[in-house]
Image (cartoon, rainbow, N blue to C red):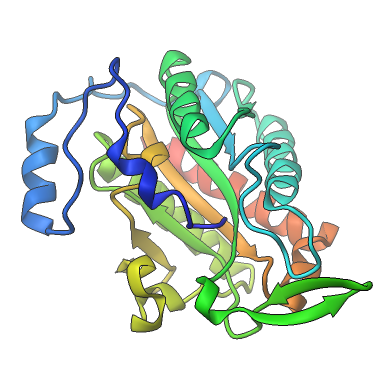
Length: 269
């Protein structure tokens, strides 16, 4: 996922979804905003076949997110992985799973996916993305005769939640379960988001064991009424990891981790 452009989207609000003012980065302010919002009704018991999961495909064909080290679009990676996760979840009994694809430019599509998830009365939204790095960390190279950029400095997946989400506790619980399952399969999370080098993309690390970060301003997390988690499945700007993310083995491993986490999450509700 390219984080460029997403931060700018936080100042826009849907008229139909009147939520909190822009986060100024102060934890105390974020807590006040959360308290001021109406509470969502308490969730009922989870029955896998009725549990409504929205797999949000990050970005759109028109606004495709990051570009990989070999000039492929993030949207393509996101779409393929989301479809695979959806198939795995359905095979595990989560029959109401839906893959959500939106169109249009980045800013408008963010609100489309929030509106769609809320209209579907989702029980959980999982937004699927693939990672890049800030522009200042990119290096130039040539791939198949075309100019491209890469950064082999960082790799790994990362998981994000928003404290503004009305189901923050449930979001964090699922995020931790998913992080645990990814770790148990030998995958390492991306540690760079806690480092000063990330600048304005630096985030608070909520769980240093499994790599869960807090990112309050993400629209798809903050403005959905259900629990919501964003997965950066891996870095496609890292040349080695891009190849891994394209492999059926890595894709199946991630899909299995998500399904196992979903099963445990549902069982504990």
